[in-house]
Image (cartoon, rainbow, N blue to C red; front, side):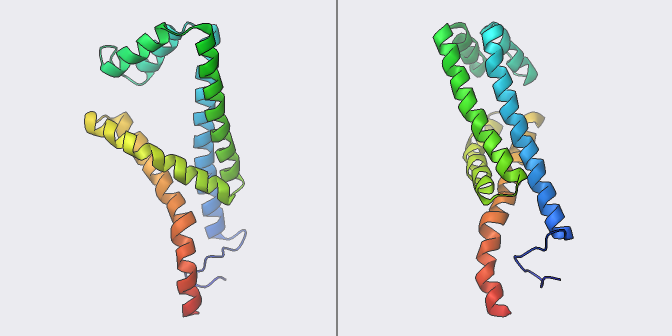
Length: 171
């Protein structure tokens, strides 16, 4: 049995299973985000971009009268075929990053945890800005989920390794 506060978890132990389950939950979330973006981007090829933008706004319960909605609708209206393929390319890159992150988290790789920490932390200021602009249950849930993911990855990648020197001095 590992000592209290030990950084090494025994494979198959309760702590190891809980950590793996949490990592795999985040991996599924990231995989879902990548898949959603990829499907939305490829749907631009077969569906009118205005319909996709309108459906996206409807899904997020954003009024078409809002400034962001107007920008998105104008942008969708101005898309040419070349621009659509550029959007698809960017979506593929984004989805590739999400899929790589999901794979790394599913396999409990340190690099997957670092990608989750950095990419999740990058979104926090934008999510706070959105919450300051208008508090909705949807935006609050997105912020809290992302904050939980970032806090968990911080715990795994920064907090736990910082305990290692202190624990070695005690034992």
